[in-house]
Image (cartoon, rainbow over all chains, first blue to last red):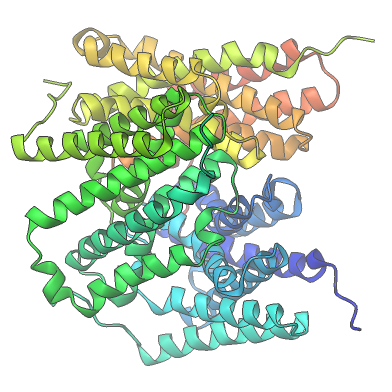
Length: 209
Length: 209
Length: 209
């Protein structure tokens, strides 16, 4: 019999890595939108922790992790602070590096959210849904706060990638797949779909002619 | 002594009917706003389940029903898929049919939300408030995500109808009225107010001259 | 040994005072935005209770206080009704009076939110964060519903003041400071920072040149 890893053991460092990446990316968007120092910190914070808060509130696991573990807010604020302190440098980081990093954060959040949902006894398909919401939640809040229509509603393959990766992890874990492998597989699926979509310019058709 | 129906027994099919109707209506709005296939599915999903999620999170009944019972997401996605697959047909459904269907979904969500709140021991007035929020919550999320001011803030008799119907059900149940009758009465009150308001063009005055 | 006050004993009247002030202020904003009678009531309600709902949902203390205690919705609706019934008078209340009242409501919500978080065992820094979110949450919802970028993202010293006040209360309570004094100190810090910022026209620099 294989011993089962403690649920949080692997999830926390991955969650923190995604938190930092999303904070950086949210801060860049906010700075480009003309916000001041505090506004940039707020938006980077919301982008970084919004998805996890949604996940934990929907799971009934309150207070959300971000309010129980100082490492989350510290990481989120640190990501925002990097943008504030060296915007000139961060702004010039090429898209070719930023977009894969964002895809990685999306994948991390999606598979971690899905795994946590499975740990809470949710069925795989619903866990995949919650994982996808974990992945895109922070970005949706960011876009709503900045007054725009969320990007995920315009650039479809973003949320689809999160959903696909989360589904792989959720189904795999549910049917007894090894934890590390199922997390890695879901992550890879999400990142590959997202990067392929970016490179190939994939887009779905509009519904209304 | 009259036997009390199991709380969920009647609520679930009604909840599912409202879910499908709201998904259809949310999908139509999203398609008309120019979203692509996935965006239409997301908005129809949010419109359909947003109110119920708000209800369950506020009641502390987590994970929300939509994450415990596959029938909800399946119904919501099915409603969106109908729009995607046959937008040309659905678009031509006359307003005279769509608006009553939307009023019916509003009424269903409002009375089901109010009944669930009473089942959780909430006082009738607060249960009415929660019922109204269940009814309008999905539409508010839809409008915020599409970048606009929620319709309920402009067309007042929508939320007022939900509040009135929810109040009838909540007060009736609290004072021992028969469950089916109280649900039906609240539903009828909501639908009648909403349809009268539409037919008569009722509007409340602005506050600022 | 000093007897500890019952947590809710002092918090409730303060919470209610803040609720009424925010309802008034939210109603004024909504009326100025051209909403009708019902829209003004909804926005004043959301502004007044939004922060407390966020606080209680994140603490897992559901249903939120506003759904357990009729005094909250009654106070919130009363604040909105004052605006509806006598907008001409309320509109002419000078900014010199309204802004300090708003600063007071912000301070009340921030310190009450922080104290409740400490009561729930949250660490001081995280309790400060939750207190600040309690203070600004209603206003953020108001601005998002009215279709704009939340004011706190533009006028930075608003949320900073809430955060500072909440931090004073949270740290003080955590290290055994007397409850009333710590609430008063945090409140004073928030209000003084906010009013100084208004008087001096403090603003933080933008990040992007």
